[in-house]
Amino acid sequence: MAPAKKAKVEERRGMLAAIMVTAVALPGIMMTPFMIASSLLTAWLGLASLMVARFMLPNVLAEPPRKFKIGSPNDFDLGTVATRFVASQGVWIVHTDQYQGKNMIYALLSVCTHLGCTPSWLEGEQKFKCPCHGSGFYITGVNFEGPAPRPLERVGLRIAEDGMLEVDKSLKFQEEMGQWTDSNSFVEIA
Amino acid sequence: MSHHADLTPSVIQGLGWIYLILAVMNGAWAANAGKQKADLRIVSAWAVFSALLGMLAFAQIAGGDQAQNFSIRMPEVVKAGIDRLANPIVYFAGSTVLFVVIIAARKWLVNNTVAWVILNLMVLFLALSMTDYDFRQIVGKPDNVPIVAMLFIVAFFTWLYFKRAVDNDDRRAKGLPLFEQVENEKVLTWPDLVYTELICMVVLTAILIAWGVALPAPLEEPASAVKTPNPSKAPWYFLGLQEMLVYYDPWMAGVVLPSVILVGLMALPYIDFNKLGNGYYTFNERKFAVITFLFGFLPLWIGLIILGTFLRGPNWNFFGIYEPWDVHKLEVLNNVNLSQYFWIDGLQRPMPVAPSGSDGLTQALYILLREAPGLILVFGYLFLLPPLMAMTVFRRFFIKMGFLRYMVFANLVLLMACLPLKMLLRWTINLKYLVAIPEWFFNI
Image 1 (cartoon, each protein chain N blue to C red):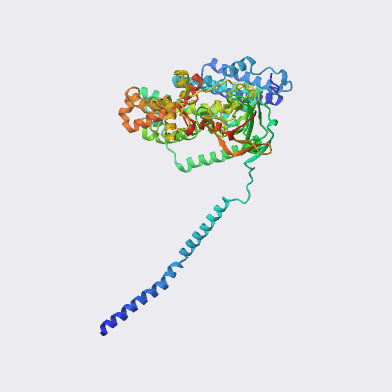
Image 2: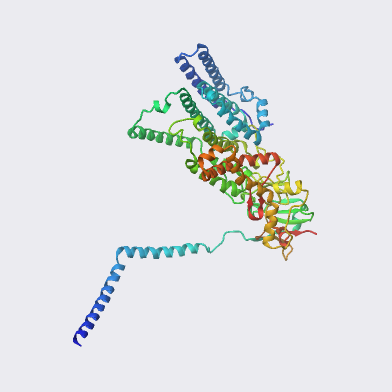
């Protein structure tokens, strides 16, 4: 009886000692300057990455709205390219009957499909010509010279409820994908 | 025709100083020839030439006040002739011919007198051309001054290489020890090398500061995402790539080919099996390596930088060096894809188009069918041509290199050749793309 009881007491003491050692040593290890510093650094980096994530959601977007009105269809004469929206919005408004023989107005994005420079509309030559690598596009936006592999892209255009033309730059229509047949990509003039 | 004065007093006087420098240089050349006990007629010819240049310099510096009637200028006939010849085909063919001439006539070109005459001609041509307003606008632009300097520097170092190589090849032929073995006097890193480097560093810094003060870098208007300057030129060292972009899709000319250039240059030591030419100049012992490298460097890289700097104007049209940069210059072009040539012109039938409403797989198959001619051609170029070359022109290379090294080598050679080949196709048959799949942004 007695030796067994003694052994149990010793075992209990041993466990107690182990717990006490752990309780004292663990914070001791945790509290080494190295651990403190690295924990703080980790915590700070975690907060900093949250801060970076916050930058992805700005309070104010200084971009012009993606949808904007450009005036009545009568403001755009047949056979002309309006270049007055290029500087502010990056679109040409084209009124022509050269694409599939239909009398229509559409908005072309002023971004070359080769490497993204802004082509210029050359009235005399009746073409868009890119200053970077010499790509050329017909008034229809179809590429015909230089390295551009595909036609210029159209953006959305519709007649708003008040009869004004409204450009929607969130919509894009690519000819090679067969998207120019989409009724949102042009406005047909009767 | 030109609305600007070709000549102004300051231009005439500036050119006067250039002629004066050239006169002094030629005087020194004549004096040196005299000291070397050269033929008296040759010495006096150089002395007379130097004196003539001196008189020319005096006339220029003194005669600046009557700029409009000043007669020493590039003749209009020469200007018109050079401008009429100016187009990419003549330029590229000319630079290739020049390259071949340099290789073939190297023994004659490395002659000191020949090199001196060429240098004189280069400076005189540049100085005379400066009397043209449009030439001055391009060459005198502060951006382009280093490129003019580069012309002379590249010419000099190429000449120096050939001079040393021809000398060593002669020694080999006569059984004499090589130049590097005779002149192998070694110097110490410290102080000889480090001092030289220090002096170079100080001098170069001083030159750059003086240059930066004298010719300030031009600033353009603030950048705008919707406004591209016309012409829009890359930094000068990228103009070769920009020229490549005229013939290729951005992912080819902007990503694939530059990576191949870099990786290919890194791979050279592993591909090269020729152990000769190590530590000394030679041409005859490394003919293939030197010619291949110099072709890639001189006509395809330096040549295209010069083309992009001096000969490309508004709308990336090609302009002669004396031609005014007319924004409305019209070049009639109509580029056609190979698939269009094949289906419409060759087989007289419409291009294969998937029936509307078909699923993605059918559409993809139709696209592949449409572009099959180009795909087969490109496949054959990259996969069938190397074995063919291994059996014929590169037979010796294939045996020495083994399969893997040979394939890497053959593909690098073929990829280098694809730029001039595509240029040729563009100029001859107005080819736009061999494989044109804009649906997948895949164009070759």
